[in-house]
Amino acid sequence: MPPLSNAVVPIVLGLIGALIGPPDDPASEQVGSIPLPTAHAHNDYRHADPCIGALRLGFRSIEVDVFPVGDDLLVAHDLDEATPDRTIEGLYLEPLARWCETTPEETLPVTLLVDIKRDGPRALELLLEKRSPLRPLLSRVERGEIVAGRIMVILSGSRPIAEVAAMPDRVVFIDGRPADLARNPPVTLVPLVSGSYGPTLETPLFGPPSDSAGTRLRALARTAHEQGRRLRFWGHLEDPAIWAALVEAKVDLIGTDDRARLADWLLANDPRCRRPDDAVPMAETSDADR
Image (cartoon, rainbow, N blue to C red; front, side, top):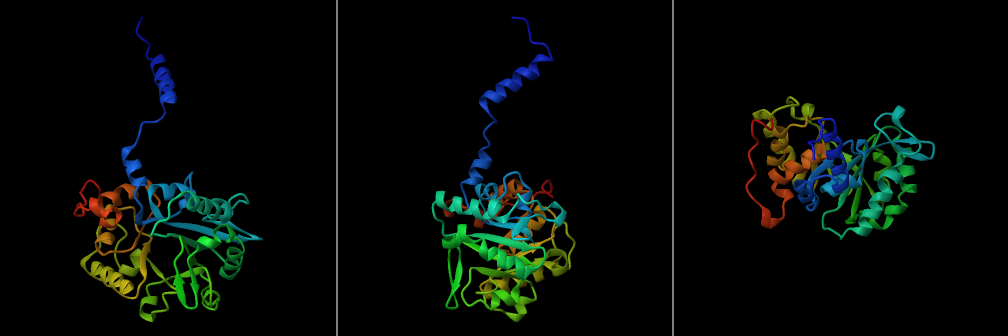
């Protein structure tokens, strides 16, 4: 048979690829099989597979931005991006309920961080109305104690703090700020504290933090943990040097817009993201990664 022309070869290879499917990705399969307790999906809804895609990669904390519009909570970063078909029920509440139905129960709950972009009290009202898909699965406060569920809903952004605090029994919590560590509000109200990376630590948004910033970082993590809270930062670059500093300080949630990249990095570098029998010393961050 005569050799195929250069024009025909790509077509033939494309047909073969369509028949056999994409190549296996062992790293992705390995990541998906292990829950990653420190992985936080920021701007998750901008992916083609929001919510479920993050869960399959092992993420157990997912952030969703919402606007109350009429009787709906619409998912968007900016109001001009909000469309009626992108509701919190369709993109997050219902998929989370289905995932819990089909996935064995874990000791590690999923955090749904709802970043309210405006009108916190109205957003709270709508969220409580639309919680029915998740009702039996939610962590809640009863008689002043947290009853753990498979999903914990925490409100950030325009936080309806007074309204949530006034609810004796409830299924939502508040995302605190670093200043709350000095005020020490009840953990049953504020189980998570989040801060803007640069202003909080007084450090640039790239590269490892300075010595003084590292000291502040470790002190904040230590105080948060002594009070029984988790700690998170937003606003830093997707920089493995920063990720390594956060892991070293035992910061609880590490955020990213690049879910697959962070999942691979955490699996290789964060001992909290391995099964006990897989534990190895944390790998150093190479210059190439930076």
